[in-house]
Length: 337
Image (tube, rainbow, N blue to C red; front, top):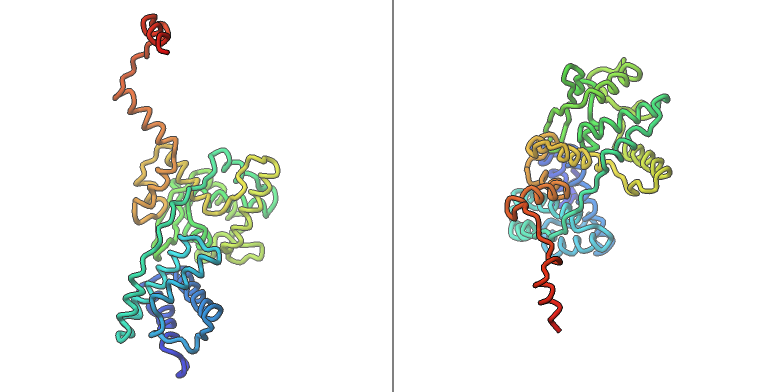
């Protein structure tokens, strides 16, 4: 570290290179997300406040400034939930800085005390079983690219994985036995193993025998056209490519299809199949069941079934009489002027 660096710069360096990855064991993607938040904050200082990072000190890192940054971020098009994510990263940095710069503990605690704004719950977007089937089976498996894309889309759906988890799958993570599984490296540097269908296992086995037969265990399962590990942008491109192609043939196909929609769709389809919500939670790698419950709240079919199952028990199933045949009642109603 340069001897002329400010204490704020030193704290940012320690936060990103030591505290998060080594002490808290956060994943690389989480560290990068926190880094991006601090980069946005420095951009705000430069563009809106005219403050150079070289002249910004931890004593200047105050509650009012952070609130102003969040307002600036929202005015630039960020959603409330996105701003809340940035706030969470800033509060984590403020909590770390309290122990490193104890003389500034009071203003830093004020930053940690900023409350997130309430955001309206997002509507879960997903494809029906039929729509997902059309999308996954669209690539031409008779071509090298088409076969690779078919396998990628199938595995993305069948494993219910996050996009980065798909990128990180290695050859050793795949087990194609009597019960085929894939080991996923998820959030918080945690691993989970999920079962995949026999059809998906056959597709992966053929893919490996054709294109990855010489790959060793530590090498990625899925590569790009340059035979390098595929990244999130590459997967997003593939999903958009085939979603656009399907929509050209069927105008009713959803317009905005993104990678995470595969995960949402898998969860909704598991619910529709009557699979227990606890298993779905473990399958998706959620720490808290409340995260998984968003799919239950989004499933109107389950709500409809529950209401219709309950109604006869309470109201009874007797036929309602045809009141139009009651002459006395009809005469009474006709007499009213």
